[in-house]
Amino acid sequence: MFILIIYIILSYVVGSIPFAYIISKLFKDIDISITGSKNIGTTNVFRTVGKLAGILTFFADVFKGWLVIEIAKHYINSSFDYLIFIIFATLIGHIYSVFMRFKGGKGVATSLGIFMSLSYIPVLFSVIIFTFIVLISGYVSLGSIVASISLPILLIIFKYNLSYITVSFIVACIIIFKHKSNIKQLKNNLYRKNKTER
Image 1 (cartoon, rainbow, N blue to C red):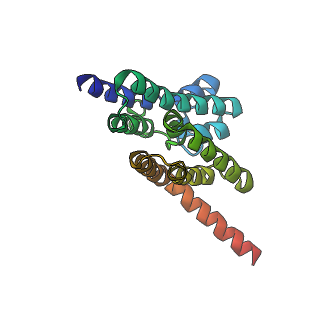
Image 2: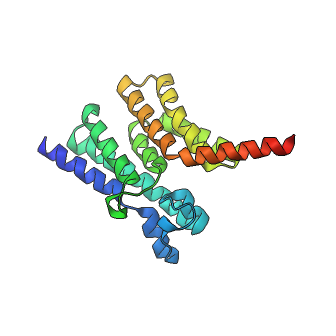
Image 3: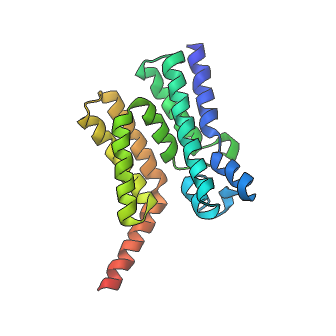
């Protein structure tokens, strides 16, 4: 139990590593937390620093989520009841980073890494849905929201147990909450579009 508690704390610390901030500083000496949308995440890095920096940020955030769960599964305790604490510690670390005065990203890439370790086939379909939505709408935020909602549904389709489904639903709610400003913007853009077309 002591090892588990230590690992939960370490999971939060690893989740807190602000790769968006680090990579932005290394590439262009930009403080991503006060630039662009001020979100410490992949999309803001793409827009303000560049494609390469954005890609590196994305894979780094995915990797930290994947790595924490992989280590936990093989060396800490494979019981999902224990993994739940590690999942949320990692995700909360990313969203409320101790290194960034409890600011952070929106949890999409890190959640992707977490669930890649737990259920990679449903996640693959969720990524396809994300890509399709972004391509037809042009909005990464909309793709992220729809993909996060799709994952619990896909887990039901692939007959995963209730604990997996419940955790993925809670994670989806967290991601949607973190996108509340994006949802408002999407609604405003849709309103303006409809008004223009009249």
